[in-house]
Length: 220
Image (cartoon, rainbow, N blue to C red; front, side, top):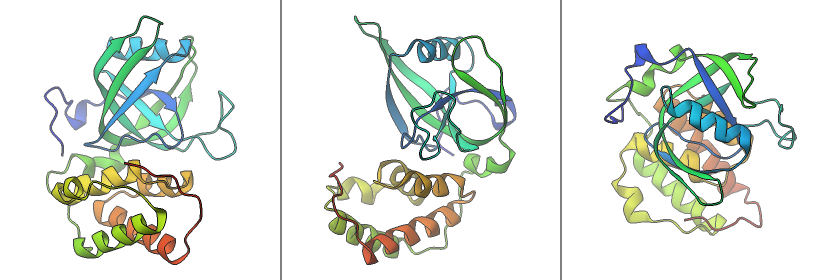
């Protein structure tokens, strides 16, 4: 588990969360996600979160519905804690979320502040608080696949920084930054254990290496 100074114990995580539906914006545990907040409903969400546990539930919108404010979202998301924020002269908030723990949505709750909120359960993802998650998949094999994938996709990667990451942070970082399809990224978010997530990530990389798709953008 990644220890933040003000991290809530697992048993004290809240039973409801504000939802921020945004495809391909993932904040896995131990990772950080900067966000530029400008819509009135999400400004409300941030200010309300700052007055409570500072937690926001990041969920992906299902493909084909991104333009609908009530679009269906995947049931599994990740809670991020607001660890910094600043105000801009033009009325925006620049915030940074630090990933805490994944959750499952039970049901959405009616709200009056414009943003969506849901009752949630954390129990399935107790492993996100595990200090020493087990990984059976060989790291060298994952790194070889990542290098082949990066070459095929023409990605720019900071290999020195990547090599310094432990298995858990490596997998979580890659879940957020690789140019995956929404459903592929969601499959990684849904994988409960680190070992399952690493194996699924390796399968995705291996498939893309064997069946490259043209036109991939560079990503640092």
